[in-house]
Figure 1 (tube, rainbow, N blue to C red):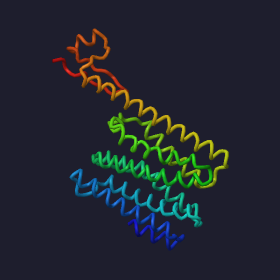
Figure 2 (cartoon, rainbow, N blue to C red):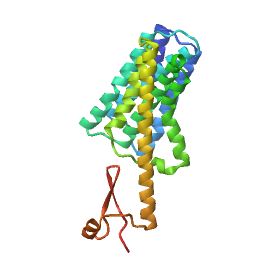
Figure 3 (spheres, rainbow, N blue to C red):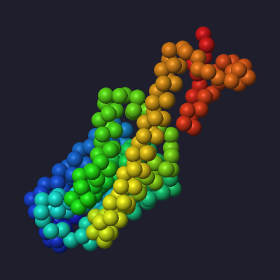
Length: 257
């Protein structure tokens, strides 16, 4: 399907060597990484929700190919570019619904969905940076900078509590960047809305990093056997294992030996 889409784009609007190269690399990379993820999870097929995400990934591959063309000086129809990006963004609200309704939610599906979103936002930020400045690229690289940081700081890999605001901020990035890439927004307005989106992203990442750090400190104290300050009445009623709330998640101290 990815090669079919690239062929349709080549026939309809034209793709130069850069567009074909990026599209092919994206298709092969998706195939290899998704195949490895399926083997690791012990899954032999994609469920209905993951099939929707795969359709989104195919559209993102087309967006990436068109972006490569544009970044190398080849004229790309804005309508086609924005339409592909808009459909990919709209389907982001579909795969989650399908997963819940078919009871097929999984860690693989959540990760697949997140990585497709990250690539789309990176591509859109690269296109918008052409007109607004390189600072826009910060929106696209935030996710990857976080991943690189987690290689050095393992506590960043811990699971985060579910927050609707995190998904909302991520969705805002795609919508704002797609609107800015259309060229319909006046320059001052485009700078304002994209700058606001970046500020929201910084706030969201900062809050998550702070939560992960606090959770890391709690785990460190618990492993070291250091008792954290607590209400005496609460501790008496739980045998010294009072629940503590960290960012909305309750953690229990290790039992006394």
